Length: 194
Image 1 (spheres, rainbow, N blue to C red):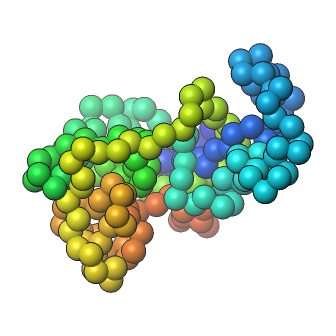
Image 2: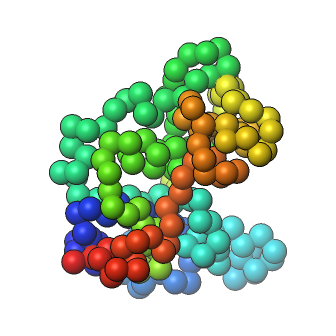
């Protein structure tokens, strides 16, 4: 299905780790790479299921790990400055993809590079899995981000510890950045895929 993505649509997918929803061939690849001796039914159902039963598509609408687009739409158009934010030292520095809110900040940067007709979280239609081969960690900055406003009603507000909104703020409300929707205009017009 990903091969038939409309070139004017940017798609992202909320992905899952090891789960019962994996196809047999994906489970086999995981088993060969990682082994599954450490995964037990008791461990996974003891109240700390980790990624075993979490439906990232349904529950984590601000998080995705897979990006699908036609490279010709972005080739030569990405601007480094759009992937940077002001730190408290007033220096423009890049954010890292393992920081809270980085997916949405990167989405904003990509949307500045090309006017896609729709940004679509297609995880209901396309499934994707990813595996961390090391403990998942979030980047801790030596110089924290500059916060535009501590007022949660301000368009300059960004939650503490999140990659902040681009300078100038946003009219998106309390969300740190724009996010990919499951029901963009291409879904209504049935034009997300060709």
